[in-house]
Image (cartoon, rainbow, N blue to C red; front, side, top):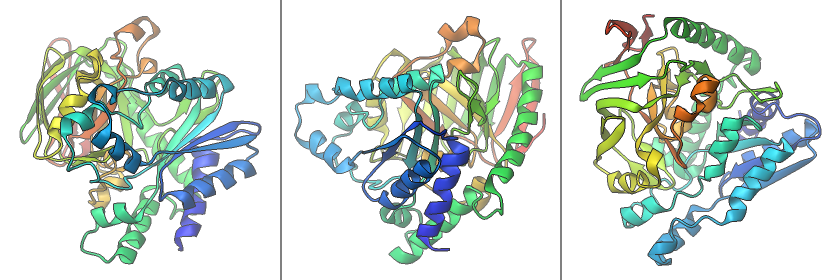
Amino acid sequence: MRHEDLATRLAELAVRFGANVQPGQVVSVSSEPGKETLARAVAEAAYRAGARFVDVTTFDVHVKRARLLHADEDTLDYVPPWYGERVLALSREGAAHIALTGPVEPQLLNDLDPARVGRDNLPSIAEWARVVGERTVNWTAVPCPTAQWALLVFPDLDPAAALDRLWEEVARCCRLDEPDPPAAWAARMGRLRRVAGVLNERRFDALHYEGPGTDLTVGLLPTSEWLFAEFSRVDGLRHMPNIPSEEIFTSPDPARADGVIRSTKPLVRAGTLIRDLEVELRGGRVVRVEASSGGEALRATLETDEGAARLGEVALVDSDSRVGALGTVFYDTLLDENAVSHIALGNGFPFAVGANEHERVNRSAIHIDFMVGGDELTVSGVTAAGERVPILVGGRWRI
């Protein structure tokens, strides 16, 4: 299938099923240079769905590079207030939001001072965490293949073949190869709903992660609720926040995390490639970060605010994941986090705990997922009495 046809099919899935755009809605689209084909397809699909207006914003990492090279050190964490005001205006409007993920220039910032890179968190905008937590926007994120990204994933192929292969695998991950992609996703969500229900019945006090280089215990809050990618706005409008999504997740107790955990896949964050990440936590807080590349930039980012160095999410992914089955490292968090289990530093989800514990959920301007799962990882639930119960072993559910 041609790239344009796949883009049209993915745009329809994002608009009709992912974000579930309603007639009369304003639709916000986050894009980058090189993603024009899918951005335009999303806009067209949104207008066909009855959108009142489609607002496309484009972030250029080359402009970010210019800032990092030449701007005064003290200005690098400045975010124009109208950026946040726009997000809050979309919230007040009850808008829909569709984000196009995937690195366009995945190593563009690698030669720059990592400490400077870590101070500039754009295109992340802190107000999005608030809006997601308040559930005022129906949103989704979908991967958008680009030429540079394709060469990063498939360096042994020529550019045209690499882009073809990336589109083919993205289509597989998003279930575009199914006759009815929304129905295929509904079936997968049904399976995850059942697993989440069992975990919620057990009410474990903590999770224990064990694998090569990993020995970490993460405490859960008494009301931590295991969720999956079927969300609803405060008014009941349903949407699927990530396509693909193969995870169940919750927000842990940010004061209880002790041990060491190693990443099992690299990650790209705003033009910085982070490889071989190892994180040590004590009393819920990161005390050590090591990486073969990108570590200093991440360490600088974890100084963004008080919550940046604590956990906001734990997520489990089983081996039935279509992303994981491909065995491809995509260097894109949306895809790689749905290949294997992951945890996130930074902002948590108030809606993942009981109302009486909203204030205990970690708060931060950042949310950085990194992948920790794989065939050699065992995740166990720990009861209040200290009993360990296997949950995920070798990628298979044991609960």
